[in-house]
Length: 593
Image 1 (spheres, rainbow, N blue to C red):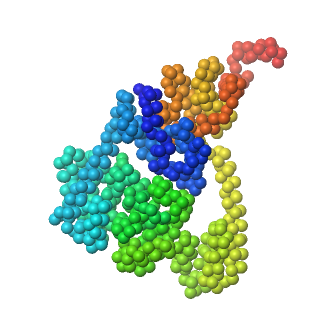
Image 2: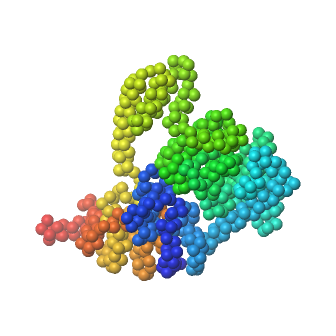
Image 3: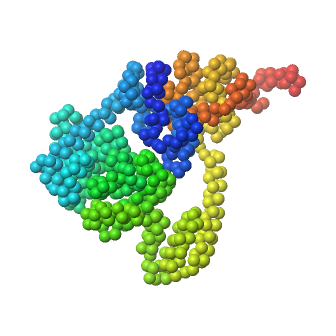
């Protein structure tokens, strides 16, 4: 059954879209509305607009848009009714009886709520273990790493005993079943069907989201036998997506410092926090992802820099390069911490202290210096061949730097390193930049040509019917603006006269809802369209917002589709029967043609 309009009015009034989106993006006032960097794709300049009057948003970069329900669907990875129920529960608004879809949504939300409860209970179990005789090895490990009791309590650190099923038995006693604990990534099942604890013989780090929910766990091995992974992290669950969250973000987000320190390991982040660096976060078992940059780093530190403090080894250097590119793509500036004499931040703090580490942060090197240092360290500059290789890579890299003053500083250093003149290097960089521009223009032309024929995933027929799509969109916009025009439209058109499948479905839906006197706003349409399709509907409304909504313009749009129908119905002389041909000739004679 369709939910009543009054319910959606309550939802909108209780969940202002500016307030909701402010929890995921930094909104900037733009007249009556707002703009922001899109939470759903990487970009350097804001292309996402939030419209206060219509309580909606639309990103001109990726095409996603809609209302607060659509936004919740996308951020929480829920279906339509799941998002509706989540918003309603948060707002204390009862959801009317809503049939099978509603029951499915209720079940999904119950599952999420139950996982939060399981994680909370498991976290308490791990904490109690740490303080028991069984957890002596874990507590000794944390103390050896220099963590004090306040820090252990602050992070809720615990211990998973080296036992096959101690957590399983504890959770079973509290009414939780094996199947739901497997889905929550607290238990695992092997090929033989045996079920056992996911975490064993590890100190446990709860992963906490921005709403203070325990969403996952990260376990660090205590007795490293070289066979088990150093860290084991929760798998993807209904409340946790790998590569979307950062460890210690719940503390770092409140930091007053002007940068974020990005670490590889949980222990690094905890040690730094204890030493006074409350702006430290750690990635969780994967390389840094665009989602982590957009939704965690960029949100809290937009306009500030990220200091990359990865391990001081080849793998760390490689990960640093990837992270630099990702931060740059998202419009965040980055610097790199040079850990001299220690393999990671945790070790450095223990060996040289917090004050020395603070100096390192202040003196963290720009990305350009890091890249040039990498080229130099990987080349044997004592030989002509090594210097030539270093010089070639450095020239290629510097040619991509647009700031000429910044480029000149590094050119001087490079000239001194390689014993060549500054003028010669500038000449090589100039030639390379000219070549880069030529190939970039060539690629741009290819992209432009390709974009004209790019498949429209939402409305695949649009490339075949460009004029008709404009007419379809115009008619749909008329219905949103002036629903009373429906009888006029239906006197000349049926849904079958819409040549594109998506617009035909939308037209049919609008007819059905208007005929039943139901709402056609985006909130009510969301149950019949995907989040991406809702974004397209929002685009149709935006693109046609300034139409002259006159009968004359509406008839122009209708005529385009009528002419297509007439053209499709017209037969050639070869396709006609004798009777049809005779009738066709008689009509032509009567018209004088």
